[in-house]
Length: 139
Image (tube, rainbow, N blue to C red):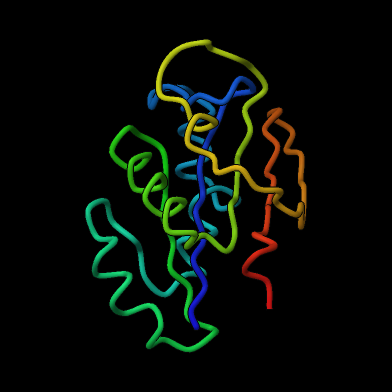
């Protein structure tokens, strides 16, 4: 069965950062940000495509990777759906070194479950990349 990765940006207090923020632009465009995951996936999951995903994901082999990029309100709803159906195998968070106390909350949609930290990397700009794996879906 295929693997589903969800990658997002988040402030310390759990909100999506502003799209024009310099750190957001870094994550979206740098080779160690979203670009890395785009280059290593086989297909993107687009907002409003969960039904298509549910129909086809079981027909792909284990090395096939779907990617959901979460960086705005529309893609946050996609993440909500992926969590609702327990489809996320890996949850990658680019954690920004500040809080905003406003905007769209990523933390509000996180399911009640313990994720296993697989890897953590700190970048020189203060961003930390945290890769979590869903223990309910590990082989």
